[in-house]
Length: 109
Image (cartoon, rainbow, N blue to C red; front, side):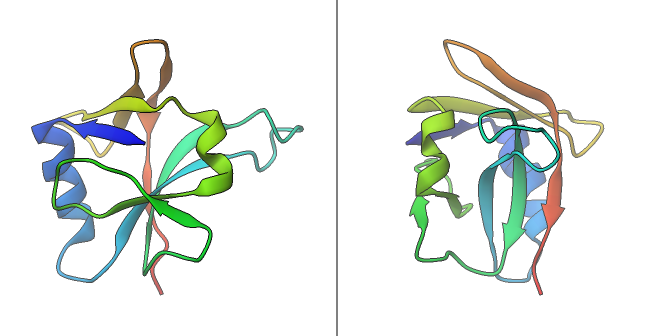
Protein backbone atom coordinates (compact mmCIF):
# COMPACT_ATOMS: atom_id res chain seq x y z
CA UNK A 1 0.00 0.00 0.00
CA UNK A 2 1.19 3.51 -0.83
CA UNK A 3 0.00 6.88 0.45
CA UNK A 4 1.45 9.97 -1.19
CA UNK A 5 1.79 12.68 1.45
CA UNK A 6 1.57 16.24 0.22
CA UNK A 7 4.21 18.57 1.69
CA UNK A 8 1.50 20.17 3.85
CA UNK A 9 0.33 16.78 5.17
CA UNK A 10 3.90 15.71 5.96
CA UNK A 11 4.53 18.97 7.84
CA UNK A 12 1.33 18.67 9.90
CA UNK A 13 2.02 15.02 10.77
CA UNK A 14 5.57 15.86 11.85
CA UNK A 15 4.16 18.63 14.07
CA UNK A 16 1.70 16.19 15.65
CA UNK A 17 4.40 13.57 16.24
CA UNK A 18 6.69 16.14 17.84
CA UNK A 19 9.83 14.85 19.56
CA UNK A 20 8.20 11.75 21.07
CA UNK A 21 8.63 8.42 19.27
CA UNK A 22 5.58 7.09 17.48
CA UNK A 23 3.97 6.09 14.20
CA UNK A 24 0.88 7.23 12.31
CA UNK A 25 -1.69 4.42 12.00
CA UNK A 26 -4.35 4.64 9.30
CA UNK A 27 -7.51 3.11 10.73
CA UNK A 28 -10.97 2.21 9.49
CA UNK A 29 -13.16 3.07 12.47
CA UNK A 30 -16.43 1.12 12.68
CA UNK A 31 -17.20 1.98 16.33
CA UNK A 32 -20.87 3.02 16.57
CA UNK A 33 -21.47 2.58 12.84
CA UNK A 34 -23.71 -0.47 13.18
CA UNK A 35 -21.94 -2.84 10.82
CA UNK A 36 -18.33 -3.91 10.40
CA UNK A 37 -18.29 -2.73 6.78
CA UNK A 38 -19.67 0.73 7.61
CA UNK A 39 -17.00 3.04 8.93
CA UNK A 40 -14.74 5.98 8.27
CA UNK A 41 -10.99 6.54 8.06
CA UNK A 42 -8.97 8.02 10.87
CA UNK A 43 -5.37 8.67 11.85
CA UNK A 44 -3.97 7.61 15.22
CA UNK A 45 -0.54 8.25 16.65
CA UNK A 46 0.63 5.09 18.41
CA UNK A 47 3.76 4.20 20.35
CA UNK A 48 4.79 1.36 18.04
CA UNK A 49 3.41 -1.13 15.50
CA UNK A 50 1.69 -4.32 16.64
CA UNK A 51 2.07 -7.79 15.13
CA UNK A 52 -1.08 -7.10 13.05
CA UNK A 53 0.32 -3.92 11.47
CA UNK A 54 1.91 -3.54 8.06
CA UNK A 55 4.08 -0.68 6.86
CA UNK A 56 2.55 1.83 4.46
CA UNK A 57 4.93 3.35 1.93
CA UNK A 58 4.83 7.16 1.88
CA UNK A 59 8.20 8.25 0.52
CA UNK A 60 8.46 10.30 3.71
CA UNK A 61 10.38 9.92 6.98
CA UNK A 62 7.01 9.92 8.80
CA UNK A 63 6.43 6.29 9.92
CA UNK A 64 3.04 5.10 8.62
CA UNK A 65 1.32 1.78 9.44
CA UNK A 66 -2.08 0.10 9.30
CA UNK A 67 -3.71 -3.09 10.52
CA UNK A 68 -3.41 -5.69 7.77
CA UNK A 69 -7.07 -6.72 8.25
CA UNK A 70 -8.25 -3.18 7.48
CA UNK A 71 -6.33 -2.92 4.19
CA UNK A 72 -9.40 -4.28 2.37
CA UNK A 73 -11.21 -0.97 3.00
CA UNK A 74 -8.61 1.11 1.13
CA UNK A 75 -7.20 1.27 -2.39
CA UNK A 76 -3.58 0.38 -3.07
CA UNK A 77 -2.58 3.98 -3.95
CA UNK A 78 -3.94 7.00 -2.10
CA UNK A 79 -3.09 10.62 -1.37
CA UNK A 80 -3.18 12.46 1.97
CA UNK A 81 -3.42 16.25 2.09
CA UNK A 82 -3.81 18.66 5.01
CA UNK A 83 -5.80 21.84 5.49
CA UNK A 84 -3.19 24.55 6.15
CA UNK A 85 -5.40 26.27 8.75
CA UNK A 86 -6.30 23.19 10.83
CA UNK A 87 -5.13 19.67 11.67
CA UNK A 88 -7.79 18.25 9.36
CA UNK A 89 -6.72 15.87 6.60
CA UNK A 90 -8.20 14.70 3.29
CA UNK A 91 -7.63 11.14 2.05
CA UNK A 92 -8.48 10.25 -1.52
CA UNK A 93 -7.50 8.06 -4.44
CA UNK A 94 -8.11 8.05 -8.16
CA UNK A 95 -11.35 6.16 -7.50
CA UNK A 96 -12.87 7.79 -4.45
CA UNK A 97 -12.76 10.30 -1.63
CA UNK A 98 -12.35 8.64 1.77
CA UNK A 99 -12.83 11.75 3.89
CA UNK A 100 -12.27 15.50 3.94
CA UNK A 101 -12.22 16.10 7.69
CA UNK A 102 -9.99 13.32 9.00
CA UNK A 103 -8.60 14.04 12.44
CA UNK A 104 -5.42 12.81 14.12
CA UNK A 105 -5.77 11.38 17.62
CA UNK A 106 -2.65 10.94 19.72
CA UNK A 107 -3.09 7.54 21.41
CA UNK A 108 0.46 7.25 22.77
CA UNK A 109 0.90 6.26 26.40
